[in-house]
Image 1 (cartoon, rainbow, N blue to C red):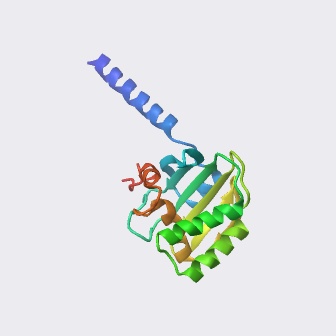
Image 2: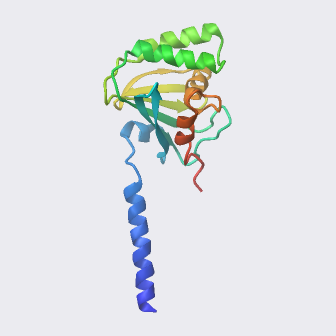
Length: 185
């Protein structure tokens, strides 16, 4: 009986160790914005077979609600696999918002101009992080350093819809990002 108790204790300790090892360290800028942040899912975005970036969706204990607008903070971290101009990233973002029929033409033009002011050119390995703040807007970070913010809830909804809306053009990436996005008990 004693041997069985020791075996069970060892198995539980091993399982907890593997869980702790498997958990990703939370980047400081994400931890400051989201309490109890954890990776909900991750995947890669490819365009005509070329990898453009790897993406990670970070959520807190409330997870991500698939109905819009989200009521809990979340962060989307993109690690670029190639060099791109910030202006092109902003243009592509506006194009995806248009495809999802989000915002008016004037709103999207204003949002694109704001993104062009904030988004820098990126190189392989560069991290751009967008943090969704419910009922406020979005903050952007470059490699963990604050870049700027767009405090417009309509923009925030449209921006994160690029990856999280059921009608996104990147449906496989959406599925990968939402793998473990539910709330924690």
